[in-house]
Amino acid sequence: MLRSLYDRTLALARSRHALRALAAVAFVESSVFPIPPDALMIPMILARPDRAFRIAAVATLASVAGGLAGYAIGWGLFETIGRPILALYGAEATAAAFSARFNEWGLWAVIFAGVTPFPYKVITIMSGWTGLDPGLFTIASLLARGLRFYLVAVLLWRYGAAMRTFIERRLGLVFTAFMVLLIGGFLALGAL
Image 1 (spheres, one colour):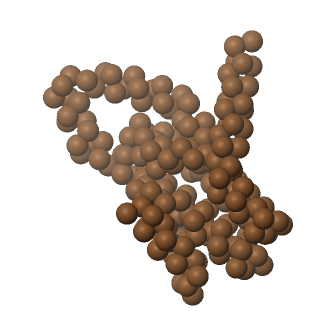
Image 2 (image 1 turned 120 degrees about the vertical axis):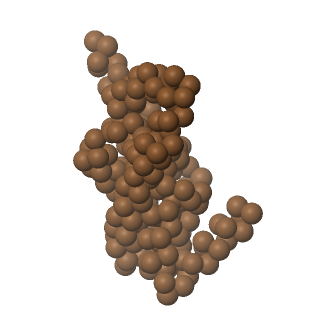
């Protein structure tokens, strides 16, 4: 089923509605959809390298808008469903403690999920659920998603099809290693 969905996503990349399809995929991927926008971006940029940065801009803006929708899901569902359930079980204090810990590191969580293969949608929903500052969430999302999508665009624009295999197989690993080192460095500096 996932392969069929992936194949249909690639077919969209070749259509005349590709930019609109990319915007839709990037939007829903940020809150519920399992296929990353890269599946559309890569063939679109390879077919039209002159539009690489426009494609990255569409993916970035639509993804951040979808992230805000995920934030709203986390905020709205928690207030209507989550809080009454926690109250029933007497677990509101536990949720409040988790919320405070998440918000302490929320900026880094949004950036980490925005550039790595970690599901960004999980962090968008958790950010709303815990009440992470929406302005901070939006700025972190713009930075992280922009970095991710513009890097893909630059690599494909510059190196073309030769870069496709690297992006599809290794870019997520490179981003993850970079974020682990970056966050680890800040933690080490904080411990000094």
